[in-house]
Length: 487
Image (cartoon, rainbow, N blue to C red; front, side, top):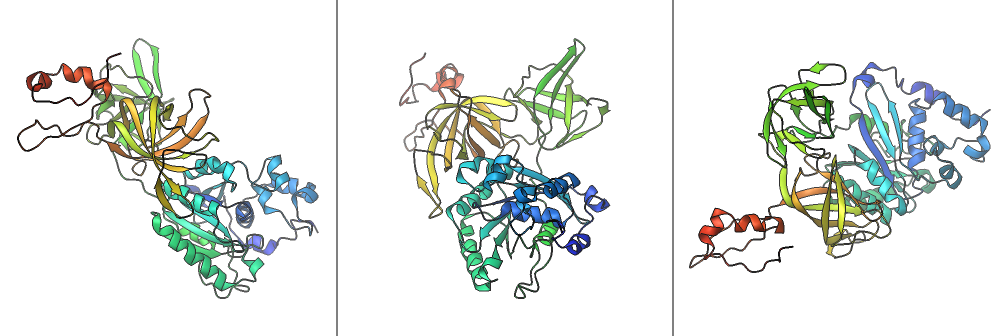
């Protein structure tokens, strides 16, 4: 009997008819990520879930049948992890290096899962998987409990705005299905998670290799657990709903096939648009109306979030790649400085004070990063720091020379996220999210006998301020504390 035949065929037949289900085909997929420390069983868990939901392709089965010695265990049982770990280095070393995306479905729902690596050096890959997820499946080895990488991944999950966590306490069979140990780890993680902004935490004891509480309940070995399996929990998990907001359209390309046509191409990042709607172009502030919405094969009467379209306006405006077209009544922040959280992804970390390229959507802009504090993973507290090392989670300030349009990440992941690029090497050195805008120019109050207010002004505005009617009228009343010489 082959390795595959030793897996209970009865279980496979009683599981889901995945791709054939109309309900699954018509549903919006739930995107989730598996994370946790190395060797906690993430790939094995998802491999088992794919197997039990009949989402393993025939060519994968054939490859496993042909190479049982390489891909299977010594006893002939299936190595489920290799249904996910496709790189040769992953299979040889028994670790996950790259993010593996898989699609599967049940009669109730469809799913996209990102299996991410557990090693600290591959944290940047874990961030990639978390950036689009609605839910996180966080694994903990029942023998070792919560480790530093568990804390790091929990923090990244929170940082990326994921609110739902399924806590999988795996390899429960290796501690004789000890309920006390399960309760202990669950309570410890719940205490740790108080500093995060999770809305739900569901703890499930599993043996991924045996398929217990993955797609099928383990009533025989764990009669003390009467909760849902992982699959049932995923089927019932609510989809994250971003805040309803105005139209957002980062301009990717200007289409000018001839003198009679000028269109602005990109993908709608939020909201909707229809012909006749008024819009504003940022950062210039120019306004117009949409006259036409065009795709590659037709003219449309509306466009919604996720649509790739070409917008034609009722008048010509100077618009460039990187500009953002937005609705008039709900605009993003437009400021010189922002507060952000980021994670350093390279050995050299992030050097405060150095100018980096910040890339967000189609825009690329120079920015200066000021470190404020980093997260201590042992104590789960933020500590003042002016250094950002590899894998550090940091609160920073971003300063630009011109006004930049951003939403906060929690309002819109697309228009509130960014990466930092080292201009010397072109390497991506950090990924982050906008937490809030900073109003650089505070309320200006003329000195009187009782009150004096100071304010900061970007150097790029100084000349314009000195020439303004307001300054010329009140310059004798305004005290300039310091200036920088003109270049």
